[in-house]
Length: 204
Image (tube, rainbow, N blue to C red; front, top):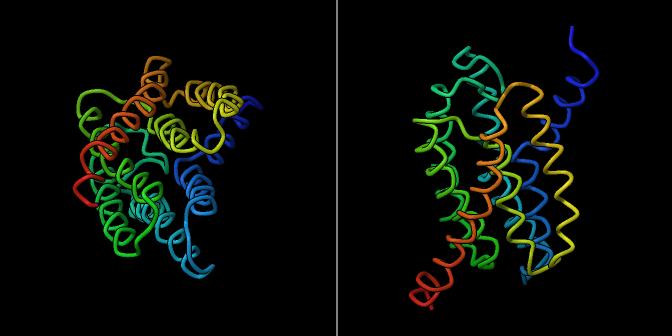
């Protein structure tokens, strides 16, 4: 029988899954940086949210129903390769659609980061299980810094609580949680640099 701590950790992990974080961050980015009609903004948000998490979540639910994975959060490291690669394909499709829709660089830039981070996450996962929950939490927050600045520091206790939940559920070790959090921030910063210095000059 699960304890109250375990139930709380489980519920927190469900609420703060990467698709939820992606949906919230994309909503804020679309509200702040997208121009045009309300319909255009809604379409951009739906495309971004679907391709950055919703479709991936549906795919994992399908795998669980077919008993291809042992649980919805895919705890077995070797079972994660397929979902990660499919997730990267969804992100690539989303990136193409956002560019076609002439979405803001903040919006398509985050999708670009989802694509690359997922591929890097898969590469790491071939050797070591790193926390996708933590990467999916800290990485997108980097894109909110121009909007909220250092007030984003209030999310640190929430990140720490999420890390505790992953350890409490024995989904990850503390080093895997810390590595996921650090990788989310560091990789996203590098990819933003690539966008600003290499991609945008070519596209303009």
